[in-house]
Every structure is written in structure tokens, then in C-alpha cells.
Length: 280
Image 1: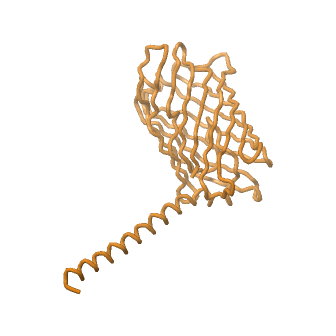
Image 2 (image 1 turned 90 degrees about the vertical axis):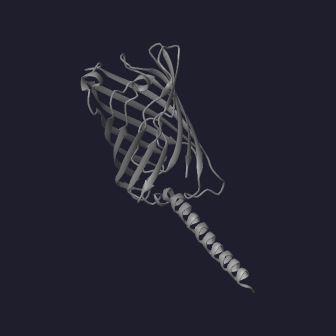
Image 3 (image 1 turned 120 degrees about the vertical axis):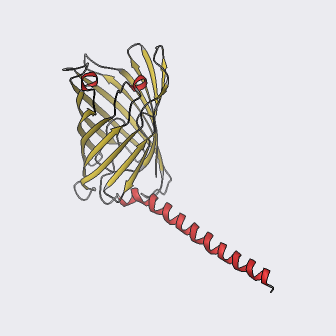
């Protein structure tokens, strides 16, 4: 074997070792990420996350949501609906990264365009699976970046701190969140608000969940000072997954719900929400 052949053989061997190591590392990383949802099965219940409110469990998924609502004389499509990618971090935290939604307006002079990006951090305070209380409680902090005033009417960045909790009773679950809408400035123009959500959910079979959400908001300061609005949202969720499914396997969920105002004052109405979730 001459020197050139020796060098080529050594380089080929080194490349093979590096590729094998990189492949193993990639598989290890993917396996680790894919195992995050599975690792939570021993720590929390298995209900379905609602369309509008957060919930006390941690979850890892990609969500693409479309909101179709009536806003005065405008018919507004919101492609994104403040959802994006959720990742579990160290079994105690969930980090959400939500790209800007795209707003498409019909029958209105409002401009089309992108709204605000947002992020959310959820910290699991306490939880238990079906053998240990079947409950979950988390602290949640949502942050909306700004401003994109001509799309979603926000003049500044804002925060929404809240507490999310839930309790399951066999195939039924009751979920709730309470929190506040807090702009960083221009309070007189935007106001603040207290938000309370309550959901009753039924797990019909291995593929189907049905729920009814109640979304209530009380406004303080700003243009809606002293007013309140309330919505009822019946929704359905259908999960597609492999026959021999395990918690570490991926699944796809299709969801649909109609948010309808039940209060005399309401800023918008008849909000049809459709969503696809890829749980990984």
C-alpha cells in the first residue's frame, strides 16, 4: 500500500466514524425529544388541550390554527391564531414559540398583514396521573410582542399571566384558567382585563374528545372600561394514530369549534376555529 492509498484509507475510516457518531447523536437527540411527551405520562392526566384556553398539563406539539370571525363589519381570517410550536423542557417547563399570525380581512377597510409574534412559558406546579389524583396545576406567562396595531389592534407589547388547573374524573375532566391581560403602557388607550375560562370535557373513545368552553372577560380602563363579554365554544377533537400506539409515538389531531357570544356586549362574534395538531 503506497502513501496515497494509506492516507485515503485513513480518511475514509475517519469519515465513517464521524458519520456513524453524527448519526447516533442525531438519533439520540430525536429519540430524546420524541420521548418528552411519553415521559409525562407518569406525571399528569391525558385530557385534550382546549381550543382557546391553556391547561395545566405540559405538552409537545405543533399547532396550526385558523380563526374565522366577525369583527364589526369585517370578516377576519386569522391564520395562526397565536399558536405555533410547544416544547417540553426538563419535565417541569413548557416553552411555546408562536410566529406572527397573518390577518386577511374581507368586507372592511382594514389592512391585510402579519400581527404580533408571541411566546409562552408554562411551569408545572403539581400534577398526578390517573393513579395519583388525575390533576394538573401550572403557572403560565404569555407575552405578545408589538406593535402591529392595524392588524390585531395592539399598541404595545403585553403580558397575560395566569394559573391553569384541571381535574379528571374517569372519562370526564374539568379545566380552568384565570389570569389578566396587562399591556406594558398606553393603558388609557388599551385598558386591562381579567380573563376566566372554564371547560367541561368528555373522552368519548380512543379517538374522539368533546368539550364545551366558557370564556369570560372583564375590562378595566381603556375603551371598554366596566364592560364584560362572554363566549360559549363547543368543540370536537379527533385523533389519528397508529394501531399499536404508545405514548412515545406521534399522532395527529383535527379540531373544530364555534365561539359564540352570550353577552350583550361582545367585541367580536361567531368565531369558527379549525386546527391541526401534530403531537410528537
